Amino acid sequence: MGKRKQSVNSEGRLRDNKYYFNELYKLHPEYFSDPNIKNLNNGWAIVNDAVFRRHFPQYDIVGLKGKPLVHHHIGGGGQAMAIPQPLHPGSGGIHKFEKQIDIWGKDQENAERLQVFIK
Image (tube, rainbow, N blue to C red; front, side):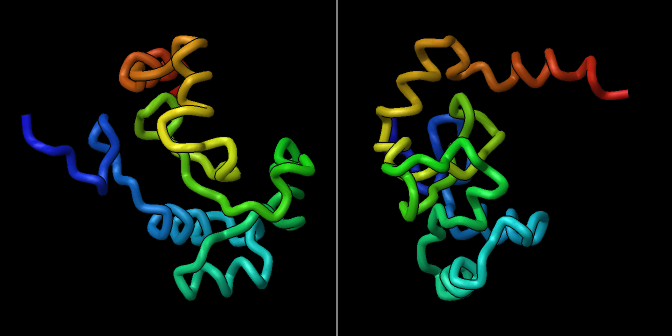
């Protein structure tokens, strides 16, 4: 078995914070404060600031305020979301929780279940 490319996760999904946050900005510029837009344009970390928390109040927690944001592949699959870095310490943290609640590695199965909502 060869080495896995670091630019993709174990499911072959792109691991690229810059790409993710640029795409998120195109879709939802209202999530980004002026300082985070500057960070985005300079390739610096986007942070969990007041503007971001206005849209994601679940991250309005003392230990997460002002922390860098990373993109997380839900269950290791194709859907991604921005989360504060302390919740995503490598392969532990949120990944452990996803495995405990049995959503890890079930991207295709979950996508098929959601097809019922598409008309």
